[in-house]
Image 1: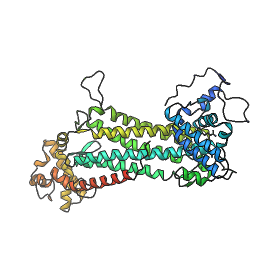
Image 2: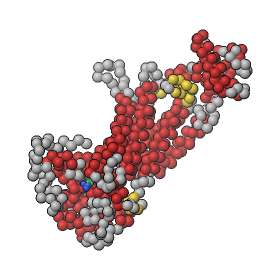
Image 3: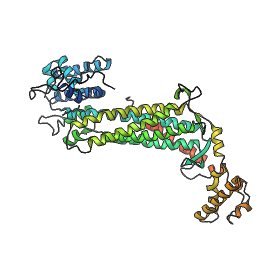
Image 4: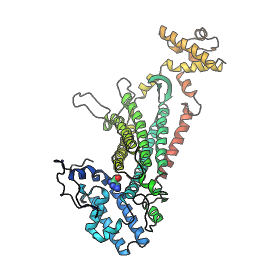
Amino acid sequence: MADTSQKKPSGPGAGAGEASEKLWGGRFEGRTDAAVERFTASIHFDRALAHFDLRGSAAHARMLAAVGLISAGDERALIDGLAQIAAQIEDGSFPFDPALEDIHMNVESRLREIVGVDVAGRLHTGRSRNDQVATDLALYLRDVSEAAERGILELRGVLIERAAEHLDTVLPGYTHLQRAQPVRLAHHWLAFAEMFGRDASRQRNLRSRLSDCPLGSGALAGSTLALDRHHTAAALGFDAPSANSMDAVASRDVALEFLSTAAICMVQLSRLAEELVLWSTAEFGFVELSDAYSTGSSLMPQKKNPDVPELVRGKSGRAIGNLVTLLCVMKALPLTYNRDMQEDKEPIFDSAVTLRDSLEVMAGAIQTLRVNTERMAAAADDAMLLATDLAEALVLAGVPFREAHEAVGQIVRHCIGKELDLRSLTREDLQAFHASFSASAAEIASLEGALEGRKVTGGTARGTVAEALSKARADNARRLGELSNGEL
Ligand code: ARG
């Protein structure tokens, strides 16, 4: 979200004095320079935390009243004022002011107008923006991580259902982008389902490290006041208060973990996207993106471009960059809070939105993808894809695999040189290369045999893939069912 409200600096000290009243208190005599105000402000992006900030403040106010640090009347006024602010933010009428720096001070300043300076001034009792922002971020990360997990599982569900349609669609599997061995399209897409299954687990797993509530850690050392940190932790849905006040305000490792999981997932999405780009070329012709998930060219009328997967592929770069950005911000910071850490937010927000949107469009693109099964079958009808099976037939006759590999390599070279189909070789032809061949090439190796022979766990035989499919389907439904219904 770009902030268009910021004025261009017009020289050193320009505008100092026109700044709104800040909440720095008696220590300050002079006002902040206008350029510094612009430089330090984060409200144009940290307003994304508003909802979490208000929840944190309400829980804090209730706790202060529960332990007798504020009156029940003040508690009511604060809760009511915070609710009014929430409503204004919701309907877009909240006057975000860059001069008030960040979301915390924007809320507090508005609260002063609504409930008066005295009552509003009691909310910050036993609290610092350092534990406040750490709490906001933990609440935000819990939500976006759950939303990410849901988005990942939904895409995974689409892949599983598309795989189910293509148990009998055969295409070449590739290594080095060279045709290698035939596989079922279901097997290919279930490979991505496995990858996204791990991505979803990574999200769930990182949330187990968001169970401690930073609120009550104060600026860094805790508080002399008798705060009930268990009260706020429970009210905000955490398991417990954080164990160490310094760690609570100084750490961003779970934020890094979120950026890392987002980057990993974006890279997996990028590989799927790359295949859609490649497979929709005239050269492959394996798939066609639906009109809803492709674009035309402004110049060339015949073009149908895979812009959606291309952008997903491109946006994976942002997610990687966001991780590197925060790693660099954090790497030399002494304990505890340092203002550098304000730079955590834009990368986190950007990765959250990039991942969410990429998952959504990829799910749609896969769901509506047209598969050209004939083109895939034609590409898979390549006798060279059966070479491994010839070698494995020799293994069954007792030949060491390396020796079999060597013999079949010579057969392949012979076929290429003579422009022969491997499957046309008779038993005698084969025996010229190795005496242990006991049948013709066509008897030993076929496309059907290559697929059905691979019954090993994790292989591409029909029954094996069908079983993997039903397992993945049940697993995905169970995991989606376990998520609560909160939306990002
Ligand atoms: N906007 C700040 C941030 O995001 C809030 C914490 C500021 N704390 C401070 N002591 N300056 O990091």
